[in-house]
Image: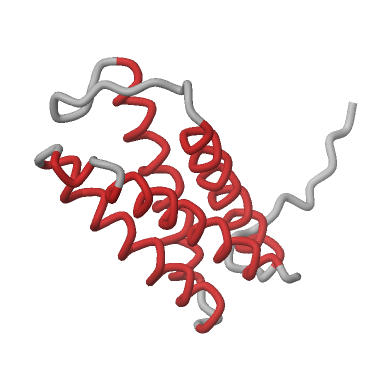
Length: 126
């Protein structure tokens, strides 16, 4: 399985977890419920773009998706987000967090390996 496929899978897993949570009651939580729908749609669209479009743009979107989704969750566990406070005490929190971290790592690694981001070729001399 190629790196782009792994990145697409990571975005799709995060989207599926958010869809599950939306059906499990998050849909009734005002702004957060609406943002979960945006997250689901964005995750699916980005997953498709990552495998279908060989450009830096979908990789950039993948990294942004993973980072912002994870950041929003961390904010909701520390101080609350739009009045919603949650915890790390569930399987879905960990599955989503791992998939979002993986999305960022894969997006950066793929960007470097495909030449979209420069990699350092300088060696340290001591």
